[in-house]
Image 1 (tube, rainbow, N blue to C red):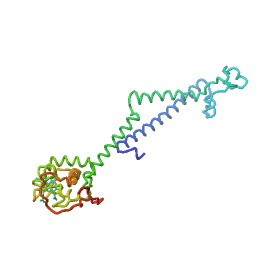
Image 2: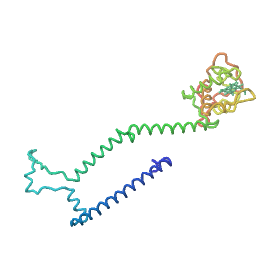
Image 3: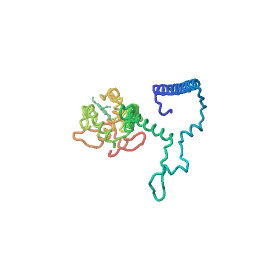
Image 4: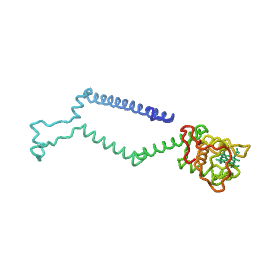
Length: 271
Ligand code: HEC
Protein backbone atom coordinates (compact mmCIF):
# COMPACT_ATOMS: atom_id res chain seq x y z
CA UNK A 1 0.00 0.00 0.00
CA UNK A 2 2.92 2.29 0.81
CA UNK A 3 3.66 3.24 -2.77
CA UNK A 4 0.07 4.42 -3.39
CA UNK A 5 -0.21 6.58 -0.30
CA UNK A 6 1.86 9.70 -0.84
CA UNK A 7 0.65 12.17 1.76
CA UNK A 8 -0.96 12.34 5.17
CA UNK A 9 -4.20 13.51 3.53
CA UNK A 10 -4.36 10.35 1.45
CA UNK A 11 -3.69 8.20 4.51
CA UNK A 12 -6.63 9.83 6.30
CA UNK A 13 -8.84 9.24 3.26
CA UNK A 14 -7.92 5.55 3.20
CA UNK A 15 -8.59 5.24 6.95
CA UNK A 16 -12.01 6.90 6.54
CA UNK A 17 -12.81 4.47 3.72
CA UNK A 18 -11.85 1.47 5.88
CA UNK A 19 -14.02 2.74 8.76
CA UNK A 20 -16.95 3.26 6.35
CA UNK A 21 -16.63 -0.27 4.94
CA UNK A 22 -16.45 -1.79 8.44
CA UNK A 23 -19.53 0.21 9.51
CA UNK A 24 -21.40 -1.02 6.44
CA UNK A 25 -20.51 -4.66 7.23
CA UNK A 26 -21.64 -4.29 10.87
CA UNK A 27 -24.91 -2.66 9.75
CA UNK A 28 -25.53 -5.48 7.28
CA UNK A 29 -24.98 -8.13 9.98
CA UNK A 30 -27.35 -6.29 12.38
CA UNK A 31 -30.06 -5.93 9.73
CA UNK A 32 -29.83 -9.60 8.73
CA UNK A 33 -30.06 -10.63 12.39
CA UNK A 34 -33.10 -8.43 12.99
CA UNK A 35 -34.71 -9.83 9.85
CA UNK A 36 -34.26 -13.40 11.01
CA UNK A 37 -35.56 -12.56 14.53
CA UNK A 38 -38.68 -10.90 13.12
CA UNK A 39 -39.18 -13.83 10.77
CA UNK A 40 -38.99 -16.23 13.70
CA UNK A 41 -41.51 -14.22 15.73
CA UNK A 42 -43.98 -14.13 12.83
CA UNK A 43 -43.49 -17.85 12.16
CA UNK A 44 -44.00 -18.60 15.85
CA UNK A 45 -47.30 -16.66 15.86
CA UNK A 46 -48.49 -18.45 12.76
CA UNK A 47 -47.43 -21.77 14.20
CA UNK A 48 -44.85 -22.46 11.50
CA UNK A 49 -41.45 -23.88 12.23
CA UNK A 50 -38.43 -22.24 10.63
CA UNK A 51 -35.70 -24.67 9.78
CA UNK A 52 -32.17 -23.53 10.64
CA UNK A 53 -30.03 -22.39 7.71
CA UNK A 54 -28.24 -25.19 5.94
CA UNK A 55 -25.67 -24.54 3.28
CA UNK A 56 -26.34 -27.78 1.39
CA UNK A 57 -30.06 -27.06 1.21
CA UNK A 58 -29.38 -23.51 0.07
CA UNK A 59 -27.04 -24.81 -2.61
CA UNK A 60 -29.55 -27.40 -3.78
CA UNK A 61 -31.99 -24.57 -4.37
CA UNK A 62 -29.43 -22.32 -6.05
CA UNK A 63 -28.04 -25.07 -8.25
CA UNK A 64 -31.47 -25.48 -9.83
CA UNK A 65 -33.41 -28.59 -10.63
CA UNK A 66 -32.57 -30.96 -13.40
CA UNK A 67 -35.31 -32.88 -15.12
CA UNK A 68 -35.29 -36.64 -14.50
CA UNK A 69 -34.07 -38.67 -17.47
CA UNK A 70 -37.48 -40.14 -18.27
CA UNK A 71 -38.98 -36.65 -18.62
CA UNK A 72 -36.23 -35.23 -20.82
CA UNK A 73 -38.29 -35.92 -23.93
CA UNK A 74 -40.61 -33.04 -22.88
CA UNK A 75 -37.90 -30.39 -22.94
CA UNK A 76 -35.90 -31.64 -25.91
CA UNK A 77 -35.35 -28.88 -28.47
CA UNK A 78 -36.18 -29.93 -31.97
CA UNK A 79 -32.86 -29.36 -33.62
CA UNK A 80 -30.15 -31.87 -34.29
CA UNK A 81 -26.49 -31.18 -35.09
CA UNK A 82 -24.95 -34.38 -36.40
CA UNK A 83 -26.80 -36.31 -33.74
CA UNK A 84 -26.14 -33.84 -30.94
CA UNK A 85 -29.41 -32.66 -29.41
CA UNK A 86 -30.13 -30.10 -26.73
CA UNK A 87 -32.38 -29.91 -23.65
CA UNK A 88 -34.19 -26.67 -22.79
CA UNK A 89 -33.17 -26.75 -19.11
CA UNK A 90 -33.89 -23.81 -16.81
CA UNK A 91 -30.87 -21.76 -15.98
CA UNK A 92 -29.64 -22.40 -12.43
CA UNK A 93 -30.79 -19.61 -10.05
CA UNK A 94 -27.23 -18.77 -8.94
CA UNK A 95 -26.33 -18.12 -12.55
CA UNK A 96 -29.36 -15.92 -13.16
CA UNK A 97 -28.60 -13.92 -9.99
CA UNK A 98 -25.01 -13.40 -11.11
CA UNK A 99 -26.28 -12.24 -14.48
CA UNK A 100 -28.52 -9.60 -12.85
CA UNK A 101 -25.64 -8.60 -10.61
CA UNK A 102 -23.47 -7.93 -13.70
CA UNK A 103 -26.24 -5.76 -15.15
CA UNK A 104 -26.44 -3.78 -11.90
CA UNK A 105 -22.65 -3.46 -11.90
CA UNK A 106 -22.66 -2.25 -15.50
CA UNK A 107 -25.17 0.49 -14.62
CA UNK A 108 -23.09 1.66 -11.66
CA UNK A 109 -19.89 1.48 -13.74
CA UNK A 110 -21.41 3.40 -16.64
CA UNK A 111 -22.72 6.06 -14.26
CA UNK A 112 -19.46 6.43 -12.36
CA UNK A 113 -17.18 6.55 -15.41
CA UNK A 114 -19.25 8.06 -18.20
CA UNK A 115 -22.21 9.96 -16.73
CA UNK A 116 -21.11 11.60 -13.49
CA UNK A 117 -17.35 11.26 -14.18
CA UNK A 118 -16.63 10.43 -10.54
CA UNK A 119 -13.38 8.69 -11.44
CA UNK A 120 -11.05 9.42 -14.38
CA UNK A 121 -10.92 7.08 -17.35
CA UNK A 122 -7.72 5.17 -18.16
CA UNK A 123 -6.47 7.78 -20.59
CA UNK A 124 -7.10 10.70 -18.20
CA UNK A 125 -5.53 8.71 -15.40
CA UNK A 126 -2.44 8.17 -17.56
CA UNK A 127 -2.35 11.88 -18.43
CA UNK A 128 -2.68 12.87 -14.77
CA UNK A 129 0.13 10.53 -13.79
CA UNK A 130 2.30 11.89 -16.61
CA UNK A 131 1.63 15.50 -15.57
CA UNK A 132 2.53 14.68 -12.00
CA UNK A 133 5.73 12.94 -13.07
CA UNK A 134 6.62 15.91 -15.27
CA UNK A 135 6.24 18.27 -12.32
CA UNK A 136 8.46 16.02 -10.22
CA UNK A 137 11.10 15.98 -12.94
CA UNK A 138 10.98 19.79 -13.27
CA UNK A 139 11.25 20.18 -9.52
CA UNK A 140 14.22 17.82 -9.45
CA UNK A 141 15.91 19.61 -12.34
CA UNK A 142 15.41 23.06 -10.84
CA UNK A 143 16.87 21.78 -7.58
CA UNK A 144 19.83 20.31 -9.45
CA UNK A 145 20.29 23.53 -11.43
CA UNK A 146 20.65 25.49 -8.22
CA UNK A 147 23.31 23.21 -6.85
CA UNK A 148 25.70 23.80 -9.76
CA UNK A 149 28.93 25.48 -8.68
CA UNK A 150 32.46 25.95 -10.04
CA UNK A 151 33.32 22.37 -9.07
CA UNK A 152 30.27 20.62 -10.55
CA UNK A 153 29.75 22.81 -13.62
CA UNK A 154 29.47 20.70 -16.78
CA UNK A 155 31.12 21.19 -20.12
CA UNK A 156 28.14 21.33 -22.50
CA UNK A 157 29.55 23.12 -25.56
CA UNK A 158 27.94 20.52 -27.81
CA UNK A 159 24.49 21.02 -26.29
CA UNK A 160 22.79 23.61 -28.50
CA UNK A 161 20.08 24.32 -25.93
CA UNK A 162 22.64 25.30 -23.30
CA UNK A 163 24.75 27.28 -25.76
CA UNK A 164 21.73 29.15 -27.19
CA UNK A 165 20.41 30.17 -23.81
CA UNK A 166 23.97 31.17 -22.89
CA UNK A 167 24.14 33.31 -26.02
CA UNK A 168 20.94 35.12 -25.04
CA UNK A 169 22.36 35.92 -21.62
CA UNK A 170 25.64 37.02 -23.16
CA UNK A 171 23.95 39.36 -25.65
CA UNK A 172 21.82 41.05 -23.00
CA UNK A 173 24.24 41.14 -20.07
CA UNK A 174 27.83 40.77 -21.23
CA UNK A 175 28.07 42.13 -24.77
CA UNK A 176 28.28 45.73 -23.52
CA UNK A 177 31.78 45.08 -22.18
CA UNK A 178 32.90 41.98 -24.09
CA UNK A 179 31.46 42.89 -27.52
CA UNK A 180 28.53 41.39 -29.44
CA UNK A 181 30.70 38.55 -30.73
CA UNK A 182 32.96 38.32 -27.68
CA UNK A 183 35.70 40.28 -29.47
CA UNK A 184 36.35 42.36 -26.34
CA UNK A 185 35.91 46.02 -25.36
CA UNK A 186 36.10 47.22 -21.81
CA UNK A 187 36.46 43.55 -20.93
CA UNK A 188 38.89 41.14 -22.57
CA UNK A 189 38.45 39.26 -25.81
CA UNK A 190 36.74 35.98 -24.93
CA UNK A 191 37.33 34.20 -28.24
CA UNK A 192 41.11 33.85 -28.08
CA UNK A 193 43.33 31.38 -26.27
CA UNK A 194 44.53 33.89 -23.71
CA UNK A 195 42.98 34.01 -20.28
CA UNK A 196 43.55 36.24 -17.28
CA UNK A 197 41.73 33.90 -14.94
CA UNK A 198 41.95 30.50 -16.62
CA UNK A 199 40.14 28.96 -19.55
CA UNK A 200 38.59 25.80 -18.16
CA UNK A 201 34.84 25.65 -17.78
CA UNK A 202 35.44 25.66 -14.02
CA UNK A 203 37.66 28.76 -14.20
CA UNK A 204 35.20 30.64 -16.39
CA UNK A 205 32.26 29.72 -14.17
CA UNK A 206 34.22 30.98 -11.17
CA UNK A 207 35.16 34.28 -12.88
CA UNK A 208 31.56 34.92 -13.94
CA UNK A 209 30.16 33.92 -10.54
CA UNK A 210 32.47 35.94 -8.30
CA UNK A 211 33.64 38.51 -10.85
CA UNK A 212 36.84 40.57 -10.59
CA UNK A 213 35.25 43.63 -8.96
CA UNK A 214 38.48 45.59 -8.59
CA UNK A 215 39.05 45.31 -12.39
CA UNK A 216 35.49 46.06 -13.46
CA UNK A 217 34.13 42.52 -13.98
CA UNK A 218 30.86 42.17 -12.11
CA UNK A 219 30.12 39.24 -9.79
CA UNK A 220 27.07 37.69 -11.43
CA UNK A 221 26.00 35.31 -8.70
CA UNK A 222 23.37 37.73 -7.42
CA UNK A 223 21.84 38.26 -10.87
CA UNK A 224 22.24 34.92 -12.66
CA UNK A 225 21.09 31.52 -11.46
CA UNK A 226 23.79 28.82 -11.27
CA UNK A 227 22.46 27.07 -14.39
CA UNK A 228 22.47 30.41 -16.25
CA UNK A 229 26.10 30.94 -15.32
CA UNK A 230 26.76 27.42 -16.60
CA UNK A 231 25.03 28.26 -19.91
CA UNK A 232 26.88 31.52 -20.46
CA UNK A 233 30.22 29.91 -19.54
CA UNK A 234 29.58 27.18 -22.10
CA UNK A 235 28.61 29.82 -24.66
CA UNK A 236 31.98 31.53 -24.10
CA UNK A 237 33.79 28.25 -24.73
CA UNK A 238 31.66 27.65 -27.83
CA UNK A 239 32.95 30.90 -29.44
CA UNK A 240 36.58 29.93 -28.93
CA UNK A 241 38.67 30.48 -32.04
CA UNK A 242 35.94 32.29 -33.96
CA UNK A 243 38.31 35.20 -34.75
CA UNK A 244 35.73 38.01 -34.82
CA UNK A 245 36.64 41.31 -36.57
CA UNK A 246 38.05 44.12 -34.38
CA UNK A 247 39.26 41.55 -31.87
CA UNK A 248 40.94 43.03 -28.82
CA UNK A 249 44.59 42.14 -28.34
CA UNK A 250 45.19 39.05 -26.22
CA UNK A 251 45.49 39.47 -22.48
CA UNK A 252 46.70 37.01 -19.93
CA UNK A 253 48.27 33.64 -20.48
CA UNK A 254 47.86 31.32 -23.37
CA UNK A 255 46.11 28.21 -22.22
CA UNK A 256 45.02 26.26 -25.24
CA UNK A 257 43.25 22.99 -24.75
CA UNK A 258 42.93 23.51 -21.04
CA UNK A 259 39.26 24.17 -21.22
CA UNK A 260 38.41 20.96 -19.50
CA UNK A 261 35.54 19.77 -17.48
CA UNK A 262 36.48 18.68 -13.97
CA UNK A 263 34.49 15.46 -14.37
CA UNK A 264 35.45 14.29 -17.85
CA UNK A 265 38.72 16.18 -18.50
CA UNK A 266 37.64 16.38 -22.13
CA UNK A 267 39.48 19.03 -24.17
CA UNK A 268 37.29 21.59 -25.88
CA UNK A 269 37.01 21.19 -29.62
CA UNK A 270 38.47 23.84 -31.93
CA UNK A 271 40.62 25.55 -29.35
C1 HEC B 1 30.95 46.20 -16.86
C2 HEC B 1 31.70 45.50 -17.87
C3 HEC B 1 31.58 44.00 -17.87
C4 HEC B 1 30.46 43.26 -18.00
C5 HEC B 1 29.02 43.72 -18.12
C6 HEC B 1 30.90 41.88 -18.03
N1 HEC B 1 32.25 41.79 -17.92
FE1 HEC B 1 33.35 40.13 -17.95
N2 HEC B 1 35.03 41.22 -17.63
C7 HEC B 1 35.08 42.60 -17.57
C8 HEC B 1 36.45 43.00 -17.31
C9 HEC B 1 36.93 44.45 -17.19
C10 HEC B 1 37.19 41.83 -17.24
C11 HEC B 1 38.69 41.70 -16.97
C12 HEC B 1 38.95 41.49 -15.49
C13 HEC B 1 40.46 41.49 -15.18
O1 HEC B 1 41.16 42.30 -15.80
O2 HEC B 1 40.82 40.69 -14.33
C14 HEC B 1 36.28 40.73 -17.44
C15 HEC B 1 36.63 39.39 -17.44
C16 HEC B 1 35.79 38.36 -17.77
C17 HEC B 1 36.20 37.01 -17.90
C18 HEC B 1 37.61 36.48 -17.68
C19 HEC B 1 38.37 36.55 -18.95
C20 HEC B 1 39.82 36.03 -18.80
O3 HEC B 1 40.61 36.39 -19.64
O4 HEC B 1 40.07 35.29 -17.85
C21 HEC B 1 35.11 36.29 -18.25
C22 HEC B 1 35.04 34.79 -18.51
C23 HEC B 1 34.02 37.21 -18.31
N3 HEC B 1 34.46 38.48 -18.03
C24 HEC B 1 32.74 36.83 -18.62
C25 HEC B 1 31.66 37.74 -18.53
C26 HEC B 1 30.30 37.31 -18.67
C27 HEC B 1 29.81 35.89 -18.95
C28 HEC B 1 29.54 38.43 -18.53
C29 HEC B 1 28.05 38.54 -18.57
C30 HEC B 1 27.30 37.71 -17.67
C31 HEC B 1 30.44 39.51 -18.31
N4 HEC B 1 31.71 39.05 -18.32
C32 HEC B 1 30.04 40.83 -18.16
C33 HEC B 1 34.03 43.47 -17.70
C34 HEC B 1 32.70 43.09 -17.83
